[in-house]
Every structure is written in C-alpha cells, then in structure tokens.
Length: 591
Image: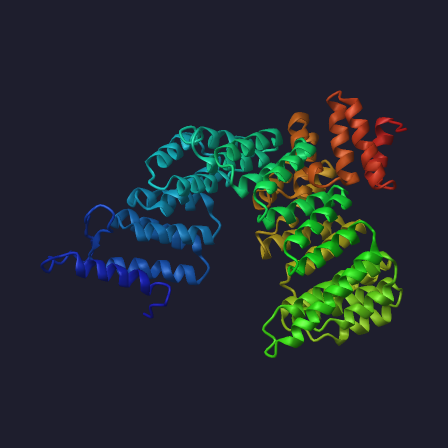
C-alpha cells in the first residue's frame, strides 16, 4: 500500500522516536498491541511501530484523502490515547479542525494538551476551543496561573487575549480577561492595552478609554497607548482625546504614524483645516517626504476642495515621474504611486460628474497590477453614462488571468445591468455565469440576492444554502438567510443558528450585528437587542439600522432617544422604505 506525503512524517517521527529512545534493542511487542514508554518530561513516548499501529495510521490517512476528516480525527484521537503520543493528538486536532467539527477538535486539543502540558500551542488550542464553545468555567483562573508562571509575561498576556477573543459573548470575554489579568494590571501597560481593546469589542468605550489612559500612565512613551487614547477617546470625549494626542506628539515629534492617524481622524470629523495645518507642520519637519503631498490632496478631496486636490496631485505625479526617469532599473514605487494618484483623480472626477475625465485618467494608468481594475471600472463608468453596449464591449475585451478575474467580470456586468434598472438582464447574466462556473459562491450569492429582490424567496433560500455548502465560512450567506427569516418572522430558531454562525465568523460586521439585534427584538429581548443594534449603528449610520434601533428604544419607553435616532436615519436616507414603514406602523410623526 502506498504511503502518501501526508502520513510519512508521522510514521517517520514514530520510527525515529522508537530507534533513539533505547540504549539496547527493545523486546518486540506482540503484533496485536502497541507498546509505549514515557521518556523524560516534555519528550514524546517511544512507540513500538507494530503492524496494527501502522495500519491504523494508514486508515486515518486514507480517510483524510477521501475528505472524511471526522473519521480520520476519530482514528488519530484513539491512537493518541492508546500510545500517549501528543503528536497524534495534534494531528487529530488538525483533522477535526479541517472537518470543522469543533466538538471533536476540542476533545483532540484537550488530549493533546494533557499529553504535552508544557506545549503552549497545545494548551492555547484547548483553551481557545473551550472559550469558543462557551465553556469558560475556570478559564480565568487557568489563564491567570499561566501568566503568573510565565517568564515572558507579555507573551502570556498576548496568548490570553488570543484565547478570549474566540468567545462570541464579548462582555463575558472582558470579564474573563479582567479576572485573568488581576495579578499584572498594576505594573503592565500591555495588560491595560489588552483590556482596552477587549472593552472596546464588548461595546464599553468608556472602559476602553480608561484602560488606555492607565496604559499610558504606566508607559508614557508608548505609541500604542497614545493611539488608543485617540481612537477610543474620540468616541467618548473627542476634544480631550485630540488635545491629549497633540500633547503626546509635542513630546514625541517623530511619531509619524500617530500624526497621520490624527490627520485621518480630524478629516473624518470634518476638521479639514486642522488636518491641513498638521500636515503643513509635518512637511516643514520632513520636506523630502513627498507622500505627504498625496495625503494633503486626500484631505482636500474629502473637504470638496477639488481644485486644490487636483493641483497637489499634479505636483505629486510630476515628482514621481521624475523619480521613475531617474532610476534606470525602475527599482522604485514611482509607477505604482502615480497610478494611486490617478485613481484619486478618478474619484474626484466622478464626484464632479465628469465621467469622461474619469475614464481618461483610468486609461492613463500604466501600472500592470492595476490594469484589470482600471478596465472593469471603465466599463462601470460607461454603464453610468448609459452606454451599455460600450460597457459590455469593454468587459468582453478583458482577458481574465484566472477564475477570480473571470468571476469579477461576470459580476461587474450584472452590476451594470442592475444599476441601469435592468434587473432581468442582470439575473440572466448571473444565471449564465452560474452555468459556466457552477461552483462559484460569489455568483450564486449575487444571483440569490437579485432573485430575493424579485420576490423569489424559495430560489433565494436554495442559492444561499448552496453558497454555505461551497463556502462554509461565508458570513454574508448565513447573515442574509438568517436576516430574511427574522424579517419575515418565521423559522426563528434556524435564524438564530444562522446568525450565531455569521457572528462567529465576522463578529464586528455591522450588518450582522444589526441582524442579531433584530432577531433579539423579534424574540422580545429588547435589552439584548439594544446592545447589538447600538454596536451596529456606531459603525453604520444607515437608515435601516436606525429604524431597528429606534423601534427598540421605543419599546423600552425611551421615546426621545428613538425620535433622535430616527431623525438621523431620515437625514441619511429620506426615502428609506424600512424607516418609513416603521414610523407609519408606530404612528410617529417626526418634525
């Protein structure tokens, strides 16, 4: 029987252990048994490579080759228990994870950790899977003991954070980490940073800011602490956060990354003059830093100062072209930098409604890696001009390099038809693509969403399930199907399972948080709904989310807050159907 490359390392390791563990040849074990002897602590046991052991390894290997990962993991787990060899426990864990059987993976990880308790990878895998499955009893104590015993406290803290981050309930994760770090928070800036990040994920911005300031107090020079003071502080007390960041930069003027982050956040808050003032100071400090020209053009573009932005980009392009000519072998980023500048000019032209100029800039891009992006975007712009024939001709002229590019071309064509109001043609384009590439989840997903818009719910559900089979980690498919059930107020237990999986895959996705919040609303858990919907609205001030959040506040008798949220949602999207329906159903008149 052939032994594949998969199984050879396992067999050879066992043979090597068997050959080196003895000073004299061992007494042969009976053919129907597996004999093991534990060596020094931390070393794997010596294993007699009997015919039975070899046979069972080969059985596991063949199962894995056939995609029967659960069978392979079960066999390897049994071998690990029989031989006391942690390497087989590790392999069982890997097979179970490949097969996405988390229960079996947890059993295997625990066996691996029990057989090799000094292996940090084994222990971390066991704890992480326990956390992800909600088994947190004793987790804080275990993590605290590991941190206390570790020579490298910082590394142990990072490992603890990685473990609790697997937990779906972020508030519970914060509680576990809080208890685990009790022994080190008084002296460790990193511990406070970990708590700050976890608190932020748990939707507790005030706690996050407080932890960031405590980290900074312990390590005043920490750029990581200063960055979190700015990021988290902007949510709680923006003026103080910005002022404290300026104070830090006055003492650390070389912290370019933090300066650029501050520029970005000032721009995001609409403080364009303040952002440009900071950039001017940076340019005086480092006049040869030509990338600041590009950043300054971005700020002006965001501010709607398009003439200033275009002038700066022209200057930037000239400088980069000079760099490119000055380097004979082309060993600079100048070509790519010029292309980035032209892409920004494309955006400006689109905002100004000058689609011809946008197309001209796209055609001027000569960076090879951007050609595909430029041509597909050119087709989209022809579609926006109403020239669907030219849009299709542009796409037809593209020679896709691989399946991914072929998929993008098909999806782009469907998008062009959809945006032109030709939904039927978009559906036909996607159906043709689905026939051509039947195992492409992206095509099935977009087709399903369009069919859902046409009221073909059964076809939508079928396609979403196909997407999940083809791509079990596609959070959007779980979310779309789960949200549809919630919105239609049916199959809520299944909707819960779908949304839990979506949240596990993408815990910070605003759309998924909205779906989970709306599910909790449907099940009358208004306080739980409020938590998730607030987290969603913090990221995505969309009218649909505002409709859900406002209605939840309304049910909690917080009517003034509800009206304020609805007003914000209406301002963002005055014609939103979901918001209109909510207000009409509740009989609410907004000023």
